[in-house]
Amino acid sequence: MEMHQIRYFLALARTLNFTRAAAECNVTQPALTRAVQALEGELGGELVRRERQLTHLTELGKQMLPLIQRCYDSASAARDLARSMTTREAAPLAVAVSHSVNLALFMPAVAEVFRAHAGVQLKLMRGGGAEVLKLLKEGDIDLAIAGPLDEPWERLDSWPLFSERFELTVHADHPLAGANTVGAERLADQKIFFQAGCESRTEVMRRLGVHAFAEPAGHQVVTQHDLIALLEANLGVALVPASAARGASLRRVRLDDAGLQRTVSIYGVAGRQRSAPCTTFLNLLRSAEWNAAA
Image (tube, rainbow, N blue to C red; front, side, top):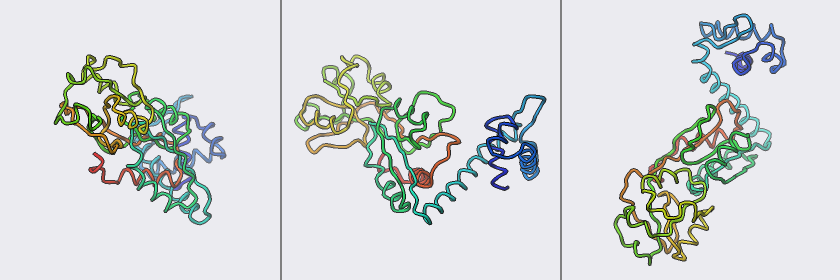
């Protein structure tokens, strides 16, 4: 397969129109048609069928599309990596991380990206689940790291990294600090802090029972730093993921509901071209051993 054949087929699969695909690829329509036909000959079957004014992918075309897209993305990433290493040109890496995810977990991967790509330009953003998804949709970021994103979007790719339980965090002097486990009934009269935009907040509240949250709309904190400050002042308790940052004067207590957990994933957009640093970062996260974090 030639790269121009792959590029022409992807444009045709995206537009489902030979004229528009040819204009997008800056070639004549006959040249695009011949390239797609040559690709079909190599793969042994029709990829695209044109019936009057209607163009659509065949079953073979639908099955081959994600494989061909990954092939094109990999080749593009290799080309970008070679160019960045030889020219030292700037290459962007825009990542959004949920407020509820501990960024420190991903520093080894970030350090490796800086080592491998001298021209990388890191853009790091924070937000709640809805904000992270909005940044992905609008193209402001390349990748996102967050808990479950409940809003469906057909272009959203996700790769699970690790699962972790939720725990109760309290000050060392808090009455619950010495408990082995804590149930929902012991939280009913507590001031409970949650991080605003935490992707799993609704599910955690549902499992523990609404009766445990007298003020479900209140006690929201944006950053983990502010959350730790409130807890260290012994002003309440917090339900946090196991990997969340820990304060020196704080204690963790297990909740007696083993189902209170979430999965942290890395998210991207299907079909969107990624820079070489972005591809490196994605591959590092997907291949890392996350048992310690979980």
